[in-house]
Length: 459
Figure (cartoon, rainbow, N blue to C red):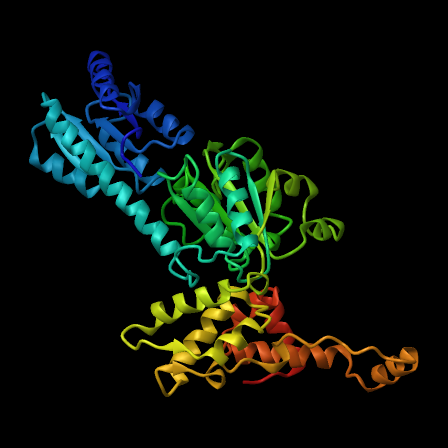
């Protein structure tokens, strides 16, 4: 990301200074607007996402000092540089206390002002980058796409072409296949790669919290909203917003996302001002959204807005030797100084394993094997692969099949018992991590909790 092309708003009643300063800043690569009073400044900040404000103190009908306080109510994070003819230390201290980034007296040297502007923008950029990094701390999949299988290469080739457009993209695939990683690959391959890549999991937050994370909120929107806050659509402005598990989005929130997809417009929670952001949306789901449309749990018009381009990522079990390449990556990444290798039998067993949890499940298997293996070579027993998950051998031809099948069904457990057993197995594989277990089962944590309670499953 770069501080060039940042938007700067000048609020100053000196028209000549505004025109002169605007020309100087445009020559340095910035986009610049100016207004001549505090009211117009506040209105402009409501309509456009500016990156920095240059503010004069001595203005009417409201002073620059009062304007500063009101701006910080709207946006606590925007850097403000105060420009004034008052050479008063007390005034400078008061402005800094109210949230100003810097205080520069007139007449000023442009070089001095330029240094302050660059520092303020760099500070704001670092703060934004920090938010993005914190947003991605829970990512456990590889930091690069690993594999040489034909299916993966075909997927990446198609994704690279799709990245060149600005169209919204829907990534479909099973849980744990690396949809987030593919989304980042698309972002890095796109013209937006110098701007933020922001991630939010639609299944991990309740409706109101998800809405406030996406679109931000105004001061007083709810009990703890002591100041206004930018939403992730504003943080991602110019870049890409990745909505993971978008099939979990509630019907009440779907129209608001649809409106944003149609024209880039949104309102903060508790706000009345319509704002705009230029964001490319990539959604991901392990559900069949057409089925969800038929069930009336997902809007048809939203689906059509999302899947301008649809990319299906192949499951790990269809990627052949990619399994071993990814396993080697995890061995190196998670093993640290404790270097270990896979035995030939362990490799064979990994290749014969179904991996319904895909890359995420493979990561857990390798991590567990590193802990419990007693030698530098990981054996098959160290992998602890659940036998129920292995590929089943081909069924033999059966004579008089109708009679035999009838007898087999007579001895089968009912569906509830099968589901209970399967959930118990998945919980054991993920060491009772309910979030990861729910992901691997393709259900929400709330649904998993309900099933655990109903079936009386205990650790």
